[in-house]
Image (cartoon, rainbow, N blue to C red; front, side):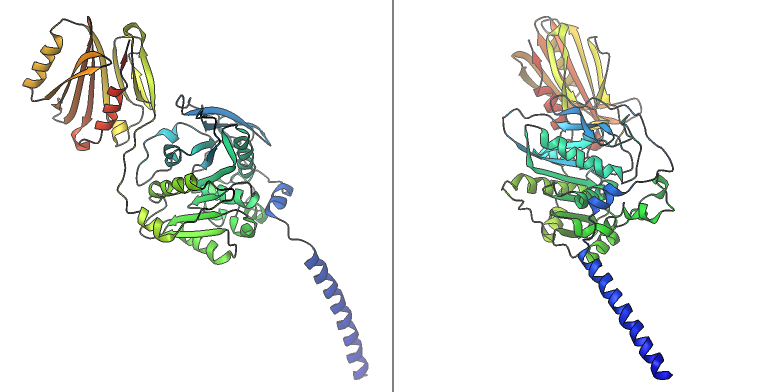
Length: 461
């Protein structure tokens, strides 16, 4: 009896073994679903329909264009670098800003703080064409916020638009982003291989490490998290992808990606004594130069840890703002001023110009007054003597072919604050035009180049 039971058990085991072998063979022959396949087949469930209709400011004329690019949900807005007009095809980076907002505004042209420069402006300042896409649900776009799901499709659509531009090299389109934008960029790198290289500053490995209050999807469905978490799809990255983060930022997420991934296309860098934001200003500048030098048929970008560490030691730089032109038609006079400055008194002969923001920097803290007067022949001489008596340094000048003076000194206001003051007066026949520039003494000479750029732009007919 015992022998029959053993024999029967062996038969059952053999049968199970056959079934298991067949199942394993079937599993082995069935290809693993790619992220693109899984993503396209998945239908996300949104528990909240959120969107916004925030207006989009006009971009700086001649520098960027406001365009629409086609996506699966309809046309979406974007800022795109203007055509350089040289008949050449240029590299472009699509930069995805951090945070959960899906819209765009004048943020790319705000002052790029050295310890927190999320603007991505290092690229276009270096000569790399740049695209800032908005996504579904943002800035009046069709659709709703999908918290890292549908936005991946939008990034892929942004690539198609960029590749269609006649002045963009479709083989040299890059992708970059910071924080939430970096996670979106990493997911896009897993979704498509069309980008030449991808640069992610502060991406997370799993979406749960982002701000859960922004999750618009069904958080009871684990698959919703899987579709938004790069850690599950690292093998799908086909193009060089560089992950960078400060040791005091999301470094633990980056290290987990590095431990998990066997993909030679993924390169991870932790910057010691840096945080989630301080890596941006120095290292986006490094990446911009890498892009400019990557001119071959195939991508040839490599980054060494020591060159990133060395770049972090560089001194902060103060860039000039994007400028735009203002014309006083009645006077036949024009000059340039920062794009982010507002003008009071337009249409008159007495203007005041100042930033619409209140940042602690030379763009936002300086002011310019422009005035026009009926001139006497001796006005320049009178002004020169007056400022000289106040201790100002006086220089005789010629501006646009007309006589002028420049007075450099300081002025104290009623509250006892001291402001560095540069005053320029130019006389055109019987018209005297003055430019009076102020910046708090705490900024020293940092604003000199800004004011010099304004004065050098003066044109008088």
